[in-house]
Length: 270
Ligand SMILES: [Zn+2]
Ligand SMILES: [Zn+2]
Image (cartoon, rainbow, N blue to C red):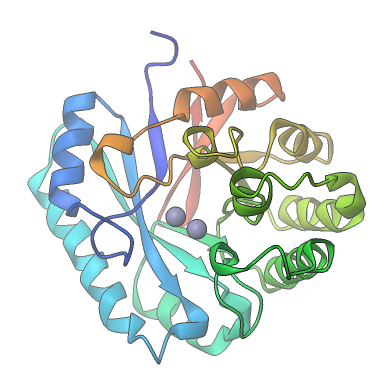
């Protein structure tokens, strides 16, 4: 089989509202599948940090990963991460969380515009798609300027629903300047870009972002690529990661990256 060192850097457990399986069960499955490493990244939505009591959830998720790590002392490397949603909407709370829990890897993401529900819930018959995407990329620019994350997760996330579920075509060249700003920010701050492979098994039938954006990141000097399945259940562990590695390789990357104690560890693609 092509690529024997599978590292999945974006995995949810039942400590995510949309997750299904415990960290322990996910680890058992990953070990059986022969995965090299798993980074658990349960959701913390910073804009709902107080109202949804995310601190408690985050601590529970963190300690369950620590427990799983001490139980699995074999070949499987287990890292404690977080998918930090909308950190720039309340940087004080984001700082408080990151100062309290010693994560290996922080994925920065944007799932919604300020004061609005997740892009999943928007009605694209009445929502202005172009305006929504303009604002989405503006929010990512603000998040990159803030910068306390390791990898930018699922860039182009709204396309999962706009292009994938609703089949509304989007011309991303309209956002090229914004996307360049985001990618250049990642390069300057030595951050990674995630290739999120969940879209491959959903209606989008593509990675987030697609290969052309990964290639542009490389052209601009990007060094680090993380690849994540965004699995919310055990049977999705590692899904699409090999395809993601092929894309990374075709775009000129020789390594994929895993973060440990928030430092990049390069793993050769082979
Ligand atoms: Zn997400
Ligand atoms: Zn996720």
